[in-house]
Image (cartoon, rainbow, N blue to C red; front, top):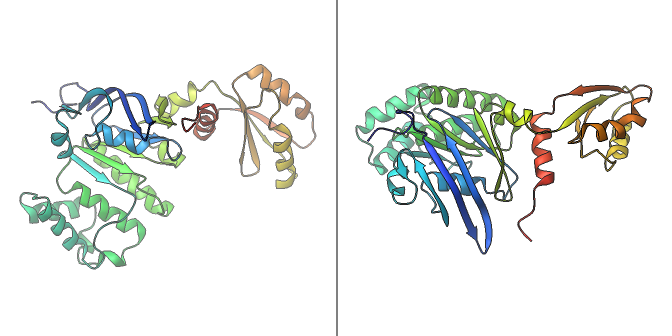
Length: 317
């Protein structure tokens, strides 16, 4: 069998995925197509169905309805075969802190029956820049190095699909950036990556995005496509009068006809609506105020996602 993605087929191609727990649809009629070597980001509020969706895509959870393939295997009938090709990294560090980096990886390799165990461990240490620290106890590592060790553990069996569930929670910005550089290198080598995240800067580093709210796919595509097709009109307003004045302006604008969102970015406000004329009419009385600078701008990815969330229909009722 040709590996999916190597003959033009998508690595993941699913439709109609649905999953319910306790009578509530956690995922409702989900469809997506992911190409080999893509980094696909899944965003949405807590409880939106991100993790459930990712687990169904790779055979870790059986959908109630829907069909499709992952890595050339049927997601329902051939789920065990998919699992063998997947590396899964959760946000919680779960390796042994009283073992060294190398000992942790050797234990995992032995537990999963990785062939040529010593060579696999050495290669993984080298690939992820851990060789110089191989004897260091895992418990003494910083958050960023623990994260890199957890990634190494996922890569020992050379998976073709990598799942990252909130992988950089609690990690400092420099370590996050280094982690993402590593992920992009792995993707360039042909690894396909599914990642759930709440960080907008991480979302922008994905090749494509899927935004879920209350179990439904609201939008998907590249970050630029998502912004371009959002339908939002956005103005940025700044002023010299300080935070209190901008807070008062935000309070005045919220709820005005045509204004759907007012989002502070430091001492600047992003004011958005999906009817450009109605928005401009609502802003007209404020445009003449002294000391305020108004600029028509592109909505940010965060603007778009907040707008999507505001329009989403709660499924808890």
